[in-house]
Amino acid sequence: MTKYLLDANVLICFLRGDHSAQAVAAQNLFSEACAGNCSLILTEVVVAETVWVLNSVYSVDRKRIALGIQKVILSAGVRCINQNEMIDALDRFSSTKCDFIDCYLAALATQAGDHVASFDKDFKRFSDVKRWNHRA
Image 1 (cartoon, rainbow, N blue to C red):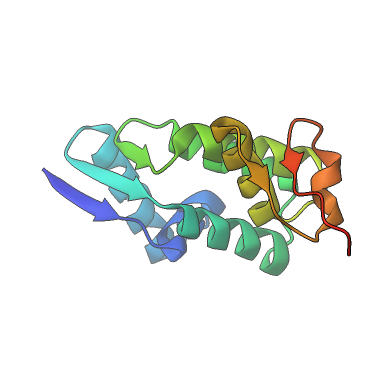
Image 2: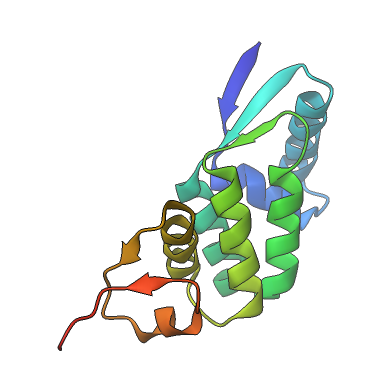
């Protein structure tokens, strides 16, 4: 079975669902994956880029972004690197104004029981995240 590493532009075309030839091709690829004819691999970097582009360039609502990507992650034929952490990060992103990368670090740290070392005050918004106690 062929495995494809997804690029953000394919994921964005699929999620936006416009009627361009690229969106149709993306839809066909996802249909092939759902049918078991190929496997799509979704990396953290591609999810982060997709979130940024949808939010910053296309002004898509955070909740809509999170739900759309979560739906893809949970689709047949899609394998997402760190799936549980990614879903957690998308939940955090949809319910806060924190950057997606901070949400992902919070999800990773919480899952592993690790601390986050950051000067960013956004991590105070996550009561379940243990933080580095700096004196800056």
